[in-house]
Length: 456
Ligand SMILES: [Zn+2]
Image 1 (cartoon, rainbow, N blue to C red):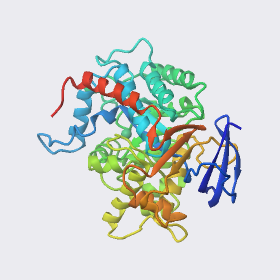
Image 2: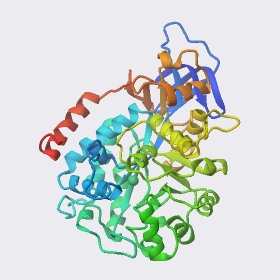
Image 3: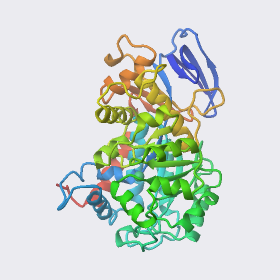
Image 4: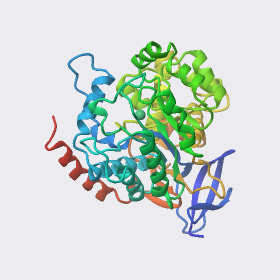
């Protein structure tokens, strides 16, 4: 046994248990006792939750947070945001991207995520030329994973076109573009890169129906191997209109009719769906990847999450643009967006579970499915544990589901998460990542190089 940890309570697959001692060995949970007293001198680790999967991230976008809030010359919508991202990509080399990715992954761990699905689409250098190693930047993502200790589901992105119908890629997309042969090499290299990383998974990510032709999309399941398949779909109303013009069908409608969508698939956003479309997703058992803070920041719209969940739909949460990073923050934004749209309270709760508990359980299961990573505290599973500091004032007098509700809706931004173990290693302690100072210093240097000087 490497170490044992005692918790006042823990959320186990069949519900809350109190007085829980978890023994760790080789990164996994070796023993799990419930109803046991804390031994003399044994530390009280608080309340244990299983680590959450962040099912959608573009880590490098963390560096743009706060730089895209000025109004553009025309309608300040998603398209002006994307234009700024393209400018940002002019200057970020491998070292800068690794430093930014490490910061984002560190903040994910501090925010309660123990696994990240990195939707990785920076394959070429700033001029658009291929790196000598097609997996140069993927290797930097893996390096950031090693620096921070987060679990990785690496999703190399296939991106070949600027719009529906196989339009040639635009200048701003030069860093993303590969052909199918190059992409097959890239996925093979990604598998080699993650060898030996505890709990790492490699899947594939056809970027969107705009960026991949039907023939190319048909190649993706084979390239995924036994890994997951993620795709952006139906995020913006303009995308829906363009897809209708191209095919006569809406994006999710087209995907369900033309791709073998099943539980391996994760449909990122799916914001603008008809009832027939979301019921189709439920029937296929695919996960919807909701990114509530980014969707709010970009003004995308609101997915019909209440109806979808009540019908048995599976969803998880992602931090996408990483404008702000935290599991509780995403779950809160998800619930509040639904409340605002429906003008009601506790809309994601169900008769058996409070709002926080229902949101947490569903996002945990959906995230695990989408990331290919188990997310329950059981003997034999990875020791991915998030410990809440229930001595904090927000938790006074709380137990059971009220702890989750108080974390998600009532706790201050810093403080509630005291410790995080990922594959048995304590990577966050007293709310801070163990390498925070070095990661932040490297990030500052990288941002000075990318931005040149302070940006107004
Ligand atoms: Zn995305």
